[in-house]
Amino acid sequence: MSAVLDLVRPDLKDFRAYSSARREAVDGQIWLNANECPWPPPGGNDLLNRYPDPQPPPLRAALADLYGVRANEVLVTRGSDEAMDLLCRGFCRAGLDSVLILPPTFGMYEVCARLQGARVERLALSAEDGFRVDADRVADVAGGARLVFLCSPNNPTGSVVDTGAVLSICRALTERALVVLDEAYVEFSARPGALASLNERPDNLVVLRTLSKAHALAAARVGALVGSPELVAWLERLLPPYPVPGPSVRLALAALATDRLHVTRQRIEAIRAERDRLARALDGLRVVRRVFPSQANFLLVACRDHAAALQACERRGVVVRDVSSHPGLDACLRITVGLPEENDRLLAALEEA
Ligand SMILES: *Cc1c(COP(=O)(O)O)cnc(C)c1O
Image (cartoon, rainbow, N blue to C red; front, side):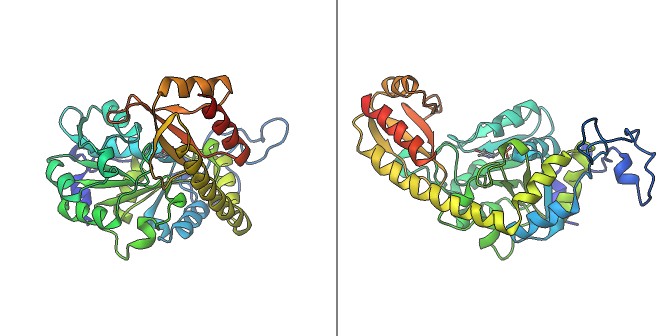
């Protein structure tokens, strides 16, 4: 048995999933076991009256193919947000266990931990050294944390965690914690993600991927957790009976067809080129103090006068994210890379600030 299963909540070790009609069904032509409506909804759209497969094999296979792993190493979730929640619930006992986060980082790690009643420990990253993740320090402060959340490229800083650092953190925390590497933006990075660069994935590493960003499917809510087959099988038991909506499955499968992936790759290249152009242009503006290097599809920008910058954007109808309340990100905005003409509008607005 995989040692990582020793880290799951002891009270859930033998947890049995709700046994849905779809799971129990074997084969047949006439489906009278799930209290479904025998007709499609009025107005057409077939397939919608039947409950979806909890983990549709074709989507699992397509995601496994995309990420270069085996199908039984993939858990399909409603966006990676659901995976974060699932991990907190599965690994942390309320009031007893903790997670470690490295702020400034994505807010959902803390939200999920707090909802589950888990304590949140922090190791702050600092702008001075480019938000670098020091593997030794992470291992030192991880203490009794059950989960360590790493985000690469990190939201909202755009900085990356070395694969070497991820590996040493995993090694140092073997049998102590599960390392959760969130790679929501890795497609925009110059470096390959962990799944492509590791020949052997440590047992206590899970990687979160999503179709929300590079694949333009934010509204479909399709994410993937990649981990050991034993862990994936166990986490599947914690999911609700029909976690992935049928229409989302079909949209995801369509997006993963070869011709669409080709377009996606071209768009990723376009975003990266725009990101670099935008970074250079922003860097030349009076209102901007610093543009942080980014490997994602957004830029973290420190302003000289952050209120003036925000006001100028607002006047022109350009909406950016104010991240100045994050510790260490005084006067910072996070700006998503848009279409070239949208980025020009942003630049024109900030020029007036
Ligand atoms: C956008 C984002 C996600 C994606 O979440 P989904 O639920 O898959 O849409 C995950 N992690 C980070 C850091 C993000 O910024």
